[in-house]
Image (cartoon, rainbow, N blue to C red; front, side):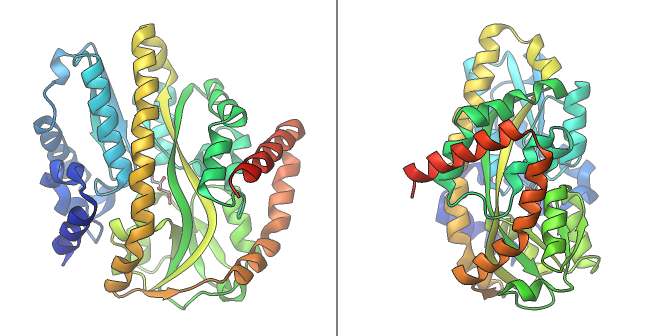
Length: 372
Ligand code: TK8
């Protein structure tokens, strides 16, 4: 069953990168095999697949980038990372070599960011939610129902205020090179269909390690439990949590349908990814290589965003085929949810630098005018 699902996705979307990495697909296509349990096995499989995929080798390179993500190698984020590798290696004729890791093989988002700070890992691409633990202004990106659509989000992130957020990471020994996209988050659970705000009552929901998410789900009457992404599948399987929230691509490609029965298109938060590089490492690069990695992060990001949107749109059918029940959330129901969580947004906005908050909302307004 699992293999069939991977094949049909591969054919439907022409994911050549999936084929390139298929040596370890079985270990990482969601299900009970998912996550850190098989970390060691995955690392060796991963490196074999990767070596076959590159004409360069780490031994010949002056610089080696260890790049890790939390999602598995079926996700468009990993394809984006492979694209980054390809661009950088080609542009430097193999003098900068990129080793790619997925499925939290190098740790969860927070651990990988800490490794970047220490200079023991070079690249990671977390959702912005856990970045809040390093730079508090990032909290604003996780306000529920903030961005009306993806174009508005990208306009804001790629504008001045987004640059400011990237630059603010330098104090934390990280360099923000580009915005990638995780997408709008939806709810799944194993207990009951969720269509309205009332249906959140009593649900134990895994959230990312982010105060805004914790407060917002509490406000809706749920019991939020922060947990690292790598532990989520097992948490759902063992019933530690009833549900979780993530974009469709993640729900499908991580095989969450195996342990979740109900899917609700809540679209409650837009999740950006941010491409991070260790500042120590970045500073050690010659100027022309700094430019190459910056451009590559941007270009690979554009590719990632395109793939990601296609999958977030098209995987709903596949999810239903796997037996999940789709609860449609109406705009009215979303408005009610937005009203309930508004005090959370207000409370967090008050805690942040007011000048920043003002300019941020100004940028959102301007972007909305451009992308109605
Ligand atoms: C993967 C995470 C994931 C995020 C989460 O490392 O934790 O739910 O959505 O994509 O960044």
